[in-house]
Amino acid sequence: MAGRRQYDDPCGLARALDVVGERWALLVVRELIFGPKRFTDLHRGLPTASQNVLAQRLRELTEAGVVRRRRLGPPASSWGYELTEHGHALEPALRQLAGWGAGLPLRSAADLSVDALALALRTTFDPAQADDLHGTVQLRLGPDRFLAEIRDAALHLDRAEGRADATVSAEPSTLRAIVFGGRSSAAAEGAGDLAIEGDRELVARFLRLFGRPEPAMGDRSRAEA
Image 1 (cartoon, rainbow, N blue to C red):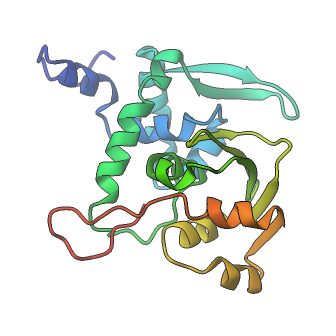
Image 2: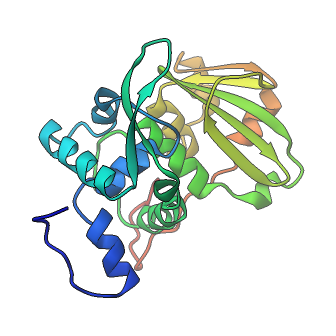
């Protein structure tokens, strides 16, 4: 990381920011929390980052041991990026920051990336609402697949496809509008934007497991994940 500005401060926070404090760095980590991605898929999740800047952040994070490059398996064998164990250790901090930021006024009309939406689900999951709920929901969000398992008042959410009690098919923006924006799932289903298969009662409860953050600093405008 030669040539980069450093804080020259022994505090652990300053040392962490020396590694992940550059613009886009933490968002690259966010995009890799749920599994490896090719460069093109990373750029799809971060469309306003230039390819040159994204490549630079990946080089820096690789040098720091946060990210590593490896060959991905079939169906399309190609090179991609994944978090190291050191990189995955950042997830609790990302979730805390995401929860804190979700209470701030929403000023962007851009869509959430599918991985940002998945992180929002993990961040806002309310265990009290899932106390007696057990089941698995397959989320088909555009081309992406996530498997959500609820057991023992905990949510296990992974990028995967497998056997499930119910399947929810929608674009990420539709699921976001239902979970965080107050859109009716019945209305979304009636409009053809949402498809549910299997245990419909499980899906209905699943969609209510995520809290909407309270606005911070006395701001009365609606906060949204």
